Image (tube, rainbow, N blue to C red; front, side, top):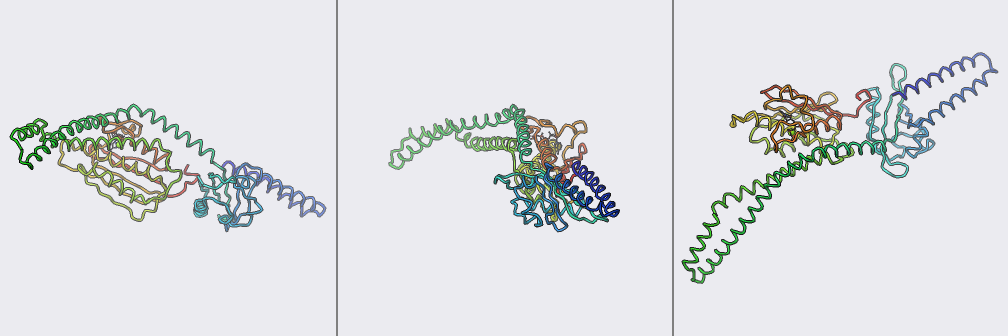
Length: 444
Ligand SMILES: Nc1ncnc2c1ncn2[C@@H]1O[C@H](COP(=O)(O)OP(=O)(O)OP(=O)(O)O)[C@@H](O)[C@H]1O
Ligand SMILES: [Mg+2]
């Protein structure tokens, strides 16, 4: 914006100069030629100025035909001004994310305000994949009619790389901080999976002995040589290994082991969200469908303690979003809701709570509201719940990562909003707002 202001000041200086030249033109004809020379000098100066700016400047006519293509545009995009001048921007032969730019142009014309179009992928002059950060500015004529557009911007590939490295190192730091907690978290299930496996080994040895004895008894019976002694030995062995006990305990141990493995997988999954660089670009996602999937995956977490109701706005447009991260947020919200209801109903186990998930299209946002009839969040801890590692849950049940990750995903990665309402003893509602379109300058 500062750049545009400077440009405007310079242009208005030059315009003033041109006006005074025009006035002089009227005065006498000998001055006419000198003034004409001066006019072309001023024009040349403007062109040189625009050319020399280290910013991409592209001028478009009302019909999106290229009327200005400065030297930086030539250099960054690898296309000569002479080759593209007069062409429609969509047909200038560049390999770039035209849909994104077209969307920015449309929105800028429609809203008559500057629109930022970030992370526009394009193929650089060397054939490598690069990114542009652009701003589309409407040029107004009389009465606010739009004459044309300017697109200014820069190659942001290096900045993006640096940012992603920084973000990555923050994530690694967070993982470093989490390491002790995670080690403890993983250690408990690993221990009981280990204990159970040793138990299976012993049980298998015992059962194997019995099977061998039974096989011997069977062979003897078949050849009519089954003695009372062998019969008794077999019975005694069955008693010794306590077959009844094994019949009861083995399925339980299997169930526990599977739960332990699931727990480990869940922790590893949560870590991945932190460690993984994630998708470079957002996808357009049907969030109703995604939420439905997450509800299915989490069924086991809530089905014993709550009924889950949904109220989806079927007219909700596709939302630009990082699918995996978004799903992780919804998953955490549902699990938190189920936990809050379980804790509240601890005394009254027969009573089920309700989790309600609503989606809606509100202005330029998609809204998702997740309510529960749990114990609510006490006033004095509300400011802490988005802190990493803040948890009120017993070890093994919560690590305090869920809302910290959710906040980072919604607010930082999606430029969205995450707020909550809570009434102690009554329940909590989390409100998520996700922008449906490209951000404008003023939003930032
Ligand atoms: N729906 C809710 N109702 C009541 N309290 C909640 C709710 N959601 C979160 N909280 C409170 O916020 C704390 C932090 O939540 P967060 O999801 O970040 O971590 P966690 O659920 O404790 O652990 P994790 O999500 O890592 O397994 C919770 O421990 C709980 O005290
Ligand atoms: Mg949680």
